[in-house]
Length: 296
Image (cartoon, rainbow, N blue to C red; front, side):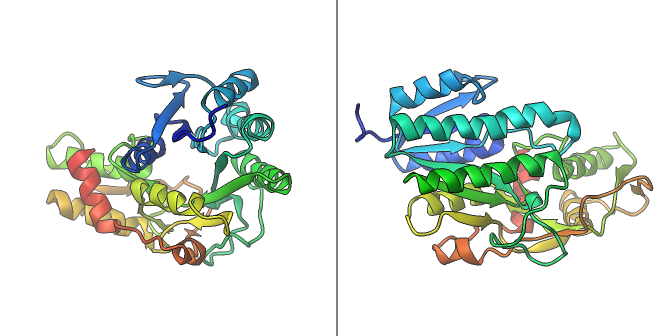
């Protein structure tokens, strides 16, 4: 078996995170093996297929494996899909690496939503809380990572906070707001309906957060880190920035949904750990908005 190659496997490469991570790894000279259920230009495969995962690990003997495959929704409707992708997928990767490629470093993705949220900046040592089935699956994989770390594997876990890019669809709120502002400007839409504009969250660029996990996996001292900028803004701040950027006044174009219920009023990270490794974000809320408006 060749353990001196420069192979990296990205599960879930067709998502926005997979795209930016691919760019970073290729720029670093790595050979990227991308795997996705939807295939595209990459290998078609499902991380919940244990035999497929095993044979892939055996074949490529990768230096790094990044598990980014999951449905980004927290809805209970995705319970079985997220269990298969997140929990089963993580277990298949870790045990395959444990048996057949122990030199491989593994990165598993988590979420700021898996922590108990009391409105304060969240750090990786805070308590977990399974308020959604999505959070439950993420919490389970943290303990998988810690268990396999005890067996001698280098397993990293990153807790992602909100991030976007021009690759986002209108299913996600930030892009929905941008597309609505553009449509209103051209007379194709009159009203943008949103929930609570006072919710505070982060507005990170996916490129920045993928760069952060590259900082994480390149070292061997820190194995779990919150991945976020720590900069929180109200959703109304984003609306103002986006409407101003396309050159229209939001007045008379915003309608609140009285039935909207949010899982949180504030979701902001404490990124002290990841920043201690030398990482700093390139984008802020303004440059993120411009990138999504101009290239989305």
